[in-house]
Amino acid sequence: MTAEAPAIRPEDRRNAVKAVVAGTLGTTIEWYDFYIYGLVAGLVFNKLFFPEFDPLAGTLLAFSTFFVGFLARPLGAVVFGHLGDRIGRKASLVATLTLMAIGTVLVGVVPTYETGGIWGAVILVLLRVVQGIGVGGEWSGSVLLATEWSTFRGRRGFTGSWAQWGSPAGLTLATAALSLVSGLGEEQLLTWGWRVPFLVSFVLFGIGLWIRLGILETPFFEQMVAGRRRSSRPVVEAIRGNGREIVLTCLVRMGQHASFYLFTTFALSYGVATLGLPRQSFLTVIMVAGIVSLFTTPLWGWLSDVVGRRRLYLIGVVTMLVFAVPYFAVLESGNFALIAVFVVLSLVVHDIQYGPQAALIAESFPARVRYSGSALGYQLSSVTSAGPAPIVATFLAAQFGSSLPAGIYLVVLCAIALVATILLRPQGEMSEEKPVVATSGS
Image (cartoon, rainbow, N blue to C red):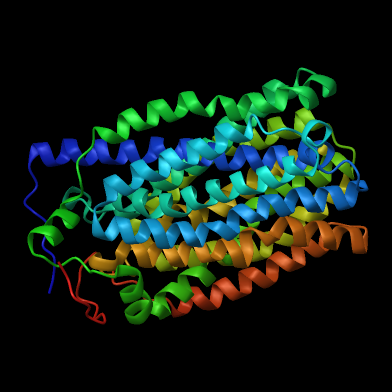
């Protein structure tokens, strides 16, 4: 059965635009929360929460708490995927935003090792789990909020890229916030400055909640409710009927997902701690890269509507594969001007995949399990590629005395993504035509 979208009316267009804006701003806030942790972890947490360990071990432990958030993301995909396919995209997104804000604000008041001993690190890990669960359910809801409107047929690559736009926007805000408090000086940063970006999240949460409460549910979901086509067990149905797409979605993301954290989180930590590059300048360069990405993400999303989603994505994977080793070779050179150019270029290259990715993945799943299926595939890559990436890169750099092996590691991930992209067959239009294993609906 094919889900037909309603006729396009002026109010449909207004509601569709409001949905895209709400999804984009909400996602920006959630990614700000997630990224500020990663940036602070690479610079501060090893000193504040693991001071008894040598610098390498402390950095690995700090990145391990960072990784915990990625481990929790598939759990968020399961919980909010179920809610999103059962009670609606909007309700699920309000819940993810609230959960993410709670986790982030409380990180800002966690006691360090000096005052709380090892319990500070334990609490940090638990709050990172809360963050991971929240962001694990966020992405799919934001993407579906943007793409499941009839007014955007034929432009889903572009509209879906606005949900992706929240990532560079969040990165830009996070690096700007950390850069401001970092300018206070080392002593102030370590004593209280690092807490400020986390506490500011409460204000952002209030803005995001107000916006999201004012939007309407998507027409696709309303039609499923009216036609009693909702799945009673969407996660189970997605795994049974679309397990292949879930696995391929995970693999398709490997090069893109890992590269982002290698080019930002790992590069910042390695560049400052090992190569002695200026912290403030490096943060500024990452912020500039985020600003450029604000333009390149929707650009590549729009281009995917013109040349084809999968074709552009394949170009992006190959480009990343070729770019990986030169990036780390430039990083090793210590030439900061050249490093700055490559850091900015890295997100331009990254966005060739990231821009069209939302529509590519959403179009690979039928409407009744679209939230669950896309969320599971998308977030499983958090465990297989993004989360381990800074840990693996830090370990390889310590073993070989160079960051170049991290580039080879990224090449391998891109090769896997290339094969997976060739095998993934999106439907092209959002429908319910793809056969699924039926379960009792309501």
